[in-house]
Length: 106
Image 1 (tube, rainbow, N blue to C red):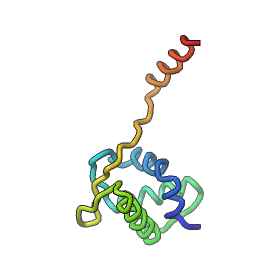
Image 2: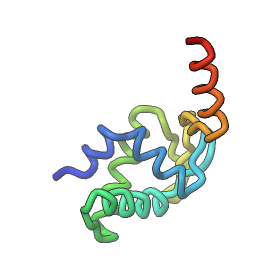
Image 3: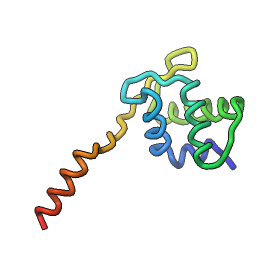
């Protein structure tokens, strides 16, 4: 299995998962270690265990991919600037309000 390809094809899902545990938002710094440990946790949820060395290589390749798409900018010392705005997850209040408005319109 190619883990990097899986992250590429599930990029939005992975970044949202990562944002739950690490400070990932527009114009924030992304650190290689954070991506590495997020990949370990992400794949563990899928029943796949990664060691640190494999996860580091996956993280490097994934960050190079994001850099090639101008979604991150390399700064220095395994640090990138995140240039994407992730969609904010809806809060329970907003979700209830949206459902309520939809029911009222019907």
